[in-house]
Length: 310
Ligand code: RIB
Ligand code: CA
Image (cartoon, rainbow, N blue to C red; front, side, top):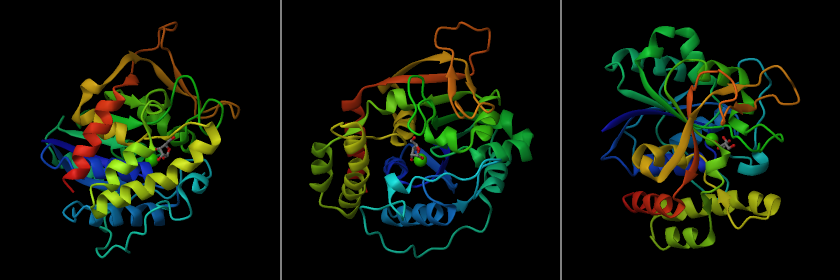
């Protein structure tokens, strides 16, 4: 069993990442879900996380709200992709259970102080505000983190600006704290997530499960896919965040390289760019395992098998 904390901003792709993690209950010990402002404001991301917890029948997992805005910059959200609720495409009931009263940042700190050093993996799938805030508030937790496996960044392209990916762009200063932490990082950026495109065939498979989870997952991604289909003319939408959980469960599906990743926080033109020294042309230390390739068929098979258990 691998102990993890998922820090997320649901968002349809975060939702599928959560369902994948919930469906791997025999292998992932989800200590808690912390939520952050990102795709939609915090009041919605925390409620959405609670809705998804109940959809999967995992009321055992505490959900906390974290930071409602980035360190320095004004919050940028993505309703144009995720809809006004952040989970458009599935009509999920209002959550029955309340939010855990602890702040998400406090939960991350308390959990890392309470668990054996080197046993907890942090899995951020949204802006890195909560993670960075925890490190600033309690630096003594940093050497206790086993690994950070995050969705963010990219080498060849951005999706918010020509060079910046959303999670990093929203809070580049938090990203700079995380990538400068010295903690082992695996980065699943757009280079790999754009190879995990969900298509109509996958949605049909999920609907054929005949379960509330299968129907909700298909409805969420049907809505979510329309933006990428129209914007990029691709057959499906990239399943960004589920790549984080899939990497934990089946790292053999992925490949990449240890590189230096440095975050642009000065220039407005390239703000939030993950500057990846893929060819080692600088002497900057390799601080991240940058993933660029995926066995997409294996990924979707893993996802289907997890959805079947819920
Ligand atoms: O750029 C994609 C990332 O930004 C995903 O995590 C998506 O959910 C949004 O948070
Ligand atoms: Ca996300």
